[in-house]
Image 1: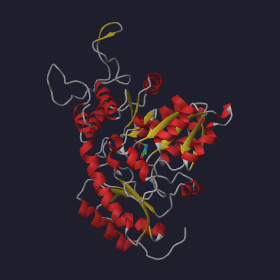
Image 2: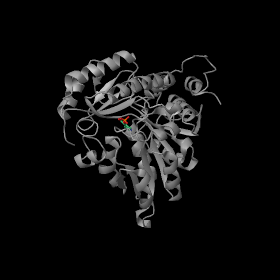
Image 3: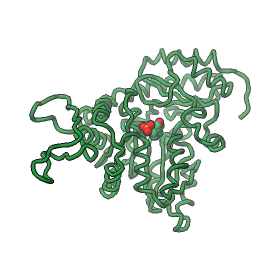
Image 4: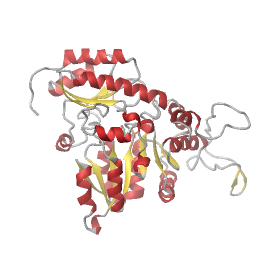
Amino acid sequence: MEGFGTQAVRSGLPRDAGTGALVEPIFLATTFAQQHVGSPTGSYIYSRSANPNRESFEKAIAALESAEYAIAFSSGMAATAAVLQGLASNSSIVAMGSLYGGTHRYLMHLAPAFGVKVSFVNDIHTELGPLLSQGSDEKVTVVWIESPSNPTLSLVDIKSVADMAHAGGAHVVVDNTFLSPYFQNPLKHGADIVLHSVTKYINGHSDVLMGVIALSCPEIRKTLSFIQNAAGSVPSPFDCWLAHRGLKTLHLRAPAASRNALAIAKSLDTSPLVLSVNYPGLDEHPQRRIALLQHRDGLGGGMVSFRIRGGRDAAAKFCESSKLFTLAESLGGLESLCEIPAAMTHNAMPKEAREAAGIYDDLIRLSVGVEDTDDLVRDVLETLKVTAINKKISN
Ligand SMILES: Cc1ncc(COP(=O)(O)O)c(C=O)c1O
């Protein structure tokens, strides 16, 4: 089989035989002419149902996630909503307590409208078993995992969770946004569906909002493709084209970000101005064993989070003072970003749930970009020096 880089560069629709254009044109047409009634010219009828740029992107994602199929949506949340609507309506799901704040918000406030009941767990490895064996009116149909979790970067042993879930008749969905298909392919470890906010590493240039799922089960594909067309949360042809272009360099961007993130995590780990560091590429990470098992070459990826000494104010000052980390939500772009999950991406979570998941007010999340390593490390250490407060705090 071809390597990841070759597939990233070459996967998609075959080159147009008529023109030989190296770069695929953008098919803006919303409708396609038919030769006779019910007999389209090619395989496209109406752009919500199928579009060449979307299909090309979906083919490339399927190849890179080792899946049979991929289905693209207008955002990561639209992909999440489609999966929950298709697989979890009128049933129970088990989700990790530490996960993207928007997913938490959806599960708390919108999923109940489809009859979805949610149990959040802090340790999925130990708490899933008892929930799966509850009575039939509490049947768990979906187990929702983020590995690494957002923003605490804890890892899940996907295979052991998938074995447990499948024995209990549940499907496993892994949100792989934080790692991208370059570092981890959850389907290879037994997951049924892998989901991405394409907005992040896959597009990689902070200029497209999009989501995608990849899977190999034809029945689930039928259900979710039906929702994609019927509910209509589809990405535009231009966004698909841009995201596909971004995907072609994922194998260059992702390891560069991971190298930078490791250097930063190591510096933070030895700093007296830092309470704790979360980074799965560090040997001290509590689930380092899982990283070595599941991640390409055991790499940690581009995301780091850490607790600064000095509480919420020091965290805010750090994010406002850094010269190379821009204070902004989102992640996975070329440029380095920082944010405070408790006040930004995860502020919809109740404080108790947040802190139970390790999301304290002093936790800073870094999306490490592909700038020069030395510049980024210097910036983090210098910013810490002028913003952290080195006195003992309680928590
Ligand atoms: C892990 C994770 N999953 C899903 C999403 C939602 O994706 P989108 O913003 O593209 O809707 C995000 C967004 O930040 C995320 O970080």
